[in-house]
Image 1 (cartoon, rainbow over the protein chains, first blue to last red):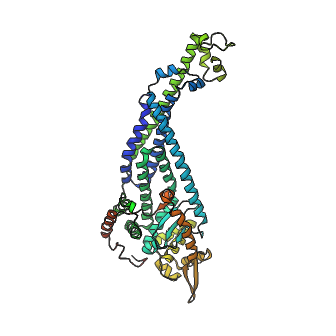
Image 2 (tube, rainbow over the protein chains, first blue to last red):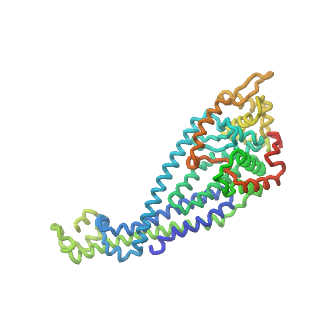
Image 3 (cartoon, each protein chain N blue to C red):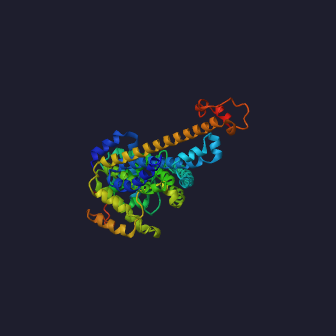
Length: 342
Length: 142
């Protein structure tokens, strides 16, 4: 408990630092799956560790100890967690869960809106065209999802480039990339340390769709040109001042497409998997330690009853003589026995 | 590129491929300057589609109200139905002006460029034949 409860934090921090640069160089599909896995496991580990730490503090509140029938003093003497740490953990956990709740409601609402738009767009074709000269293209998730492209975008691309654009957006829809997006968004809401993972994840999704488009069109250069020309055309049409220094996602995609496809590598995935396994194992270990600590605190309460029955249960008159450790052994499982001690 | 393989792939994956062909045809007609006959549309599409396939797709899109057509010679010339599209534009406008948060579920084809990005992109693309946006080639030809 002393160390293991903190290990998920270290795993989260390590992955938040190491995973994004590594994922950008892996083939995008396995990278996206690995990042989603990592985000889910570390978010759960983070919340679990915070909950355990918070619980050691909460369990020492006399009212709660009474409810759970364990000894506060025994718990305090065994507890390796400082009260300050427990208090901070409780606070952080509450804030994080609240932020997760807000993000979940918002994301859910946006997905529902997108779904409704998909159903209400005119025509029952996969492609919906906007009669607008501003170049624009995106995938709208739904059942089925729709590809929305403006006339301005279609007119600025050649035949094969249009095919690449459609194949790219189709890949987003077919591979359910909005689910990945939601995973990253929600895990980053729960744990702010995971924000870099969410950013890398969204980049990897674009790369995944680019690679699928390249496979479909059969020419990486065509896709690179489609992405580049679409981006340049969009930049000509409008340049939002606030975005003057964005991280250069488009050039990176184009560069990756002009290079040969990324080689498959299993070592980073294996290392990531081991880190996640470590995270799970230490959380389980911390949880079982915490459980044991609680058990012994319940025992300790029984022990004091056995020693001084009159002092421990002054108001109970129908107490059977000497509620010894034998009766206590059953106490955690049988509440009706336990109640007699108070 | 490999027209034969592509057509086989279309036929192999059945219904979804039909939807994809509709998208291709619709996109080609929107990119064109005026009405196009089935033969002209076929020339603008990548790959070697059968003439009858294109004809079928065109009449299906017309049935769905996505295209308007008028007689030209012995056949029809097709054009995108603009009122449908302006309806789409109206609907999408509110979706797109909803701020970055609302756009979080949209997978955009390209994100915004900084000025540095733009220079870098010009450099990257200039290494690969006539890739600059100024040098637009006729669609469908490589």
